[in-house]
Every structure is written in C-alpha cells, then in structure tokens.
Length: 388
Image (cartoon, rainbow, N blue to C red):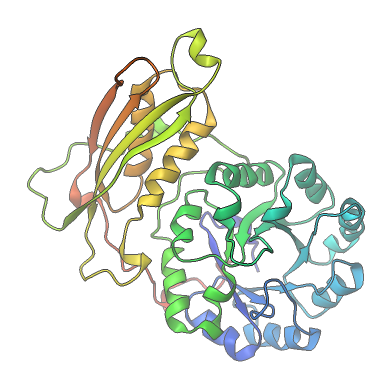
C-alpha cells in the first residue's frame, strides 16, 4: 500500500461501521475507509469490528480507525487489527503535550493522525510537537459545539495557515467532521490531503450522499497548485499565463456568477503610510461559467460564489500588495484556474482615499472549449484501487 501523501489530489475518507458499508464506500469511490461510529461526532468502534472491515477491504483501500482513547493501549488495539491509520483525539488540556510524546512510540507501528478540534485552536508549537512525535498527519475536526461547522469557527485564511503549518513539518493535513456539500469546494481551494466528511459521506447516509461528496472531491475539481513537501505561495504569473483571449462567439451555455460590493480590509498601496494599516477595498467580480448539460441538482452542478469570496480572502491575507492592478490580476488568475470558468471580470476599488473610490477593472478570458463541464463522479472501475 503506497502512502496517501504520494497523491497530488485530495482523498475522501468515508466513515463506515461494518463490512457491508465498507463495500458500498469502495464501490462509490472512497479513497480511505474510516472505521468509526458514524452516529457520534468522533467515536471508535470495537477492535473486532475494525478487524472485520480490514478483512473486507483486503488492501483495496487504506483503512483508518478511530482510537477510543488517546492512550497507548487504545491506539495499539487499532493497529493490531490491521488499520493503516489510527486517528487520535488530541483534546486541549494541560496533559496534551505529554500524551502526544507518549504516543510517539506507537508511531512506528501505525501511521498516527492527530485530530485537533477547531474550537480548541492550534498553533505552530502544537504542529511541531505532533510532527516531532512521529505522527503521519494531523486533521482539523469540526467543533464539538452543537450546530457549528468548521467554517463557522475558522475562516479560509486561518485554515490555509493550518495546512501550510502542517506541510512545513512534513505532515499530511486535512479536515474532518460534519462538513456539508457547500463546504467542499471552499476547502478544496486549500488542497488538503484528506477530507473526512463524517455522516455526510458514510455508506449509511445513502448512495446519493456518497456520490455527491465523491463528485465534489473528484480529481476533476481544480485546486490551487501546491508543493506537498513545503508550503508555497501561489505563482499568480503562472496561473495568469493560462488565460488567453476567448472566442467571442462561444457564449451559448454560459452562465454568470457574481459577487458585488464585497468589502475587506487590505494591506495595499505603494506609499509608506499605506503599509502602516489596512484600508477598505471593495471588490466586484463577475465570472462566466460553462453551464452543466442538465438543470442543477446539487453542488456538483454549480460554481459556488463562495469560491470567489474565499479566493479573495486568501490572496489579501498573504502579503502586502503594492498595486490594485496586481491584486486584480491575482484574483482573475486564481478564478481562471477553475476548469469551468471561461472569463473573469474583476473590479478593485480603494475606498479610503477620498469622498469617492479609485481603482481598476480588468477582464481576463480563455476559450470556452478550454473549460470543462463535468458531472464529476468517475466510475469506480476507472479509479486506481491502490490510489491511497
């Protein structure tokens, strides 16, 4: 079994509680089979149940099992049952550093995935501690508070920092828990190694749910380029080079998705005084997107406007940007990296320089035939069963 880190794409971890559900998850494209109790937020199942799942999977996919406790015996029990990965909850308390170091001994027997809850937060010291103990990766789980999702607690730039911090230490990095379909395209911007979708992509939730999540995490879904060995800034010049003039006659089957009057504080400007504090900038973005061949049925069939707003947030969070023209080019380049986008019009306005606004508007295009419309879900027979 090859390591999941060798894959450049995001892998879907589907939760199952028994062998029958494991077969369903494999048939519908799961990359990693997660042995756990899907009825609870983060809970394991018995070692015997894990052994049965491992026997059924029989090496066709990696198996990840949740340890019932964050201690040696519980982790060893899952490793002894043949799990490729063992997920361990690293709840924040005074003993967490000690527990992480103690588990390092078991990192030689199984690939450990430390699970950190979003409402507990994370920092570079915690990531360094997890890596130093020999863990294979770290997953940021949804909050333990009822009714809150991952994106309710942490914004996209903070989640990007989590992925970059983990990759800088050579760890697999991903998100898990109660993710909803609209969350998937937004999180894919960060190119996580693993998305574990809890109850939404369990076999028990039904074939349609698995297929929708699989489609959204499909290899056809564009992600921002990244180097899995180290956090790297996006090369906007490379992205921009992909855009070139479109055929003006290719307008049939194109929809317009827009975000208007979106205001954020941005570190922008060439004057020294503009480096001292952020200033309000207004964004209006229109993208033309190839229409699916049928009426939209779920998130697989649409280009989410959240991708526009999240892309802007990620770009402005990275560095001071000298020119509005540079900022507009970066936004257009990122949006044109998505396979269904044929053109992007980006308007950037600085609002703090007087009674009016100043700025720039650009349009960047590519041929409609270069964009792609996907139903997204590949047949199970087309996928490499050893992808993980």
